[in-house]
Length: 311
Image (cartoon, rainbow, N blue to C red; front, side, top):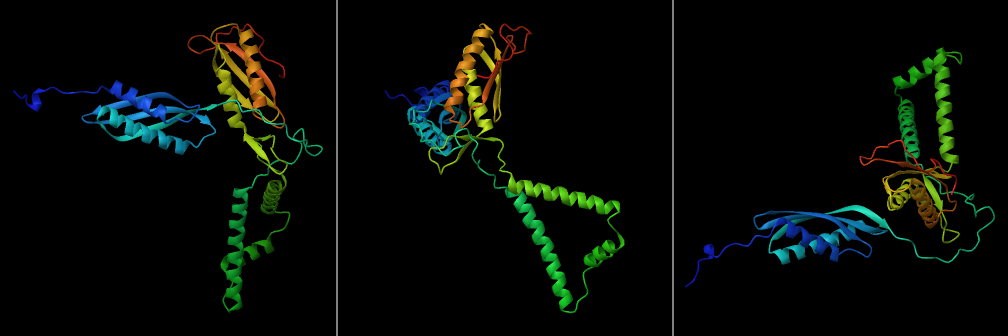
């Protein structure tokens, strides 16, 4: 006796199982040092939509890695579940920074360059240069068109005659002339500053592997690295980090443990992390710890010192 197909029962793959399969499939395509943080799946009929959040090692080409993970998750999930996967979403939620391998010491550079006092990387000043070029080109173009028109027998432009008449009727004692002079002086000082000052104050100089190579690290990126390392210390539940050229400030919230011991461990970990950044001049480290309650608010108690000296 043959049972009709409609009476043989159905096979249903739960969204939880699809999510687990998608996470495992994405983990198979991760580069070394990466991990899957979370995943989600939604099943409708014979199709499924999956999304996976991953942590990638730094540095890595995030677009290429995400494409490999997406293709692997789509093909493996479809093959193992029998569902069609029309769309898979890969989110890069975090980057993990591994300790760099030891490098040989570089040869000593020229005098005055060991402490980072040499020339910095100069800003290209694209916006001021573009504004100055546009304004200068527009003014020269208008004046050239008017001069050519006058040379061919035409009347001078109204704006030029108005400017000449206004300048003939106003002298240096007038308020408008003084304000215009002050504005021109300020613009000139700003342009001189753009031309003479190196700029890029938000970047920290790094130790160059060769004399002809100059490397810089953004202060925001350095602060993110230090914050991630601080949150990895047992007892630290939150952290705020700001990095300047000469000083790195850390404010850590301690959820459990003795604040003095947690602060000591934070100073040790972040001191080593600052050295791993490879900066020409290591910023002084200042750590402040505060005990916080379960809701994340400061409870006003503090076992350890509030401010640390330079580490």
